[in-house]
Length: 317
Image (cartoon, one colour):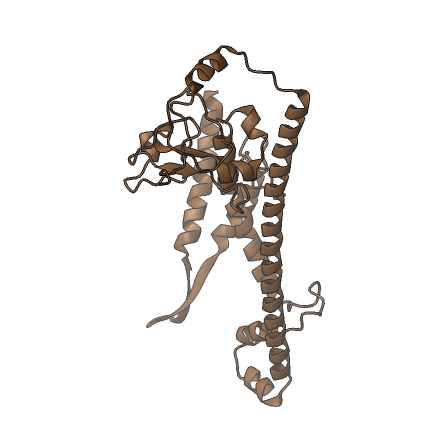
């Protein structure tokens, strides 16, 4: 009758159901973490066995569960994704000539084992070092090639999505231009208030028309000045020094800063901004009433407070 055969551990451990045999991670995997884990497993082998190649190691060599920390071993006898052999690595590795082994039988081989322990290991030649370096470089290059291919595929998909988005927006713009030229649409816009009519026409202007001068009417100049004032105010109160900015007021407040001059120039402008309402008086008739805006009053208060605080700080220094 044929004897029972089984795969043995690389370190010569006896077979145990509680410590199953584990294969090496796939060195040709597309996942970088598996390739890195294979390198860590491979580092526990003898240099002579490492030179036999990654495919040979993956097919022929096994490591049992006793060489893995308890935190890497699952109740199902499988290993975790980050398992690395770290225990009992000083045991004498056995020969890995065949994938299938017979049950060990006592014999004169014990004397050979004792003699082999007394013999110093042969030094690794420079050729072996070069081969090992080339193998590592090829593995690293292969991993980089996989990452590059994935990046190219992702960028191609992004470009296709942007092309589809541009095509859709271009179609919508062409439809809007056709609608804007119809007589019914022009009659409809004439019934709108002036501000709404201007806004509607601006939304459907041709994309190839110049976006510089003569687009906004003269009435929009005051609105542009108003927006610029508050843009500068927000910059002056939210400045910082840890990042350079093209906006001159978006900087740290200090001596001889431009913030003081800006606040002095804008205070009269802010104080002049008021709501105009028409009220009826029994004695005077219709009377125009001017009321301050709460948010503008807060801006004025904050500017004056900052100026006073800065004066007080300079007197203490």
